[in-house]
Amino acid sequence: MGHVYVFDHPLIQHKLTYIREKSTGTKEFRELVEEVSALMAYEITREMPLQEVTVETPVQKAQCKVLAGKKLGLVPILRAGLGMVDGILRLIPAAKVGHIGLYRDPDTLEPVQYYAKMPSDIGERELIVIDPMLATGGSAAEAIQMIKDMGAKNIKLMCLIAAPEGVQRVQQAHDDVDIYVAAVDEKLDEKSYIVPGLGDAGDRLFGTR
Ligand SMILES: O=P(O)(O)OC[C@H]1O[C@H](OP(=O)(O)OP(=O)(O)O)[C@H](O)[C@@H]1O
Ligand SMILES: O=c1cc[nH]c(=O)[nH]1
Ligand SMILES: [Mg+2]
Image (tube, rainbow, N blue to C red; front, side, top):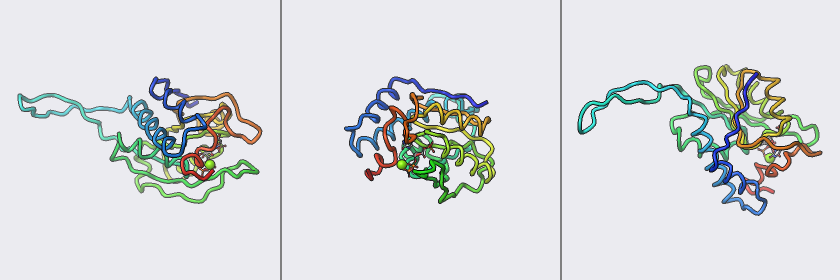
């Protein structure tokens, strides 16, 4: 069974509060999503392996550490996942980015595929699937299945807000995938929106409400 990690860093929690607030406009919402994504990337990379190197400082040689060269890939689920990409790339600028196009059918609530393009060396990369919202979990579970079918082996899922139902669905479908979130909310409403959540993440990011 994959683990669920809730990032309770005060800066993440503070900014998430203003992301949730309905009077927060598009510009600020976008900036906050980017900032929280960067802070979550900082937390998620905490266990990244390091290797020893020798550098020559102006004073003398020094034994230091650099990242051990693990290749990373980000996989935003379109559209809303795009809002998290730039914040993460600020910390991990060399990461490659694959895209999965999925939307949730408003009647059936099932994910509908419309795009997929991944780095060619997908099987060698540590992949982070990103989407602000994990509601029923249908979209995330489908996206993970799509990239597994394309050769992905090492996958994490990072979302801002999850519903317990979504966590359960992803855990049942993909027991090898750990889930990283800023909050696990109470429940889903009758339209399967997260309660209290933040509304429709894609619409709020792109001003299409
Ligand atoms: O867990 P689920 O029940 O599948 O719901 C979550 C999905 O819904 C939202 O996308 P949406 O379908 O609104 O598409 P958009 O990003 O284009 O707005 C959200 O960004 C997730 O991808
Ligand atoms: O609460 C929700 C559920 C699905 N998609 C969203 O953007 N928000
Ligand atoms: Mg949407």
